[in-house]
Image (tube, rainbow, N blue to C red):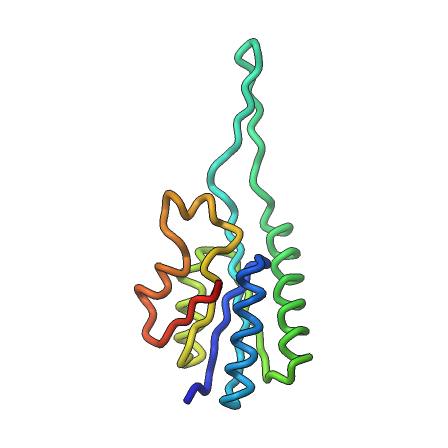
Length: 147
């Protein structure tokens, strides 16, 4: 039934569960698995106030830090998938996670996108809506959200 499965990961527990489920589905269907990760620098800054009005702005991680961490997350997920016997490739680009997941799905003619219900961006999603909801809304294939 499924020939190409995209699984979105971010290092969260829900993403690890999504990877396990995606691997099981890929094994059952003989499907190829594409692990995608799209780290995004937070745009909000943290401001610490002091008695004299002093403020310190803490900056978001650098592009290099995001890329290094993202590559580690993708490599770990790919190793787990390969251990389970999956035919796996990876895709990691810094940017908007929703756009990247949808682009990866389109580029790989995905039949299914698997992702966690809540990831590392849970606080921001309270204000902006979750990545999984947006992907499901715009996807041109089946989507499975894992807890």
